[in-house]
Length: 192
Image 1 (cartoon, helix red, strand yellow):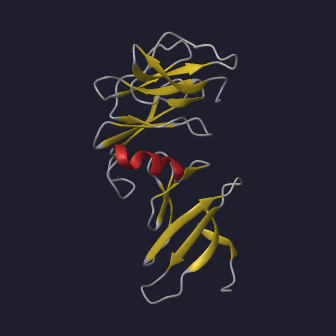
Image 2 (cartoon, rainbow, N blue to C red):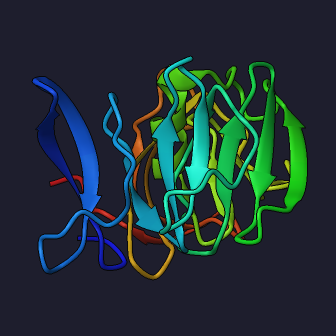
């Protein structure tokens, strides 16, 4: 359950479908989905229409947004990310577009197969592009770490990034926690 609703699989006229139910086990609204919709966050769920396009819906099952190729859930700071191919729109909880970015701004194109990976790399207002840069949701560089390679392993609840970073192709990787707002390590693991 998320915000009082859960997605369950049912059979509608003999075909498998998905519906939202409330905590009493009742169908929340009269709309079913062929593809599994995303849980509700910040008052909205994400559903895929029969034409393959995604929309945001409210808790009455009403469509609240235009169609996109893909939409993410709203993340903790109240932003959702919607792709229409080469551009990325950043939406707030009243569905206002607060930023529009080119698909290459974070180092890769924003198509459906990357979007879930994208949200896992965005936390506390800062995005890690999977290489050497941190950005905010408007595409501004927050920190650039010059070097050979880097990878984010996890994000802690207080907003620190567990990063393994290699300054040069022959250098030993540094494994520790980085503050994304400063780009500095606040804790480094010992080799053993």
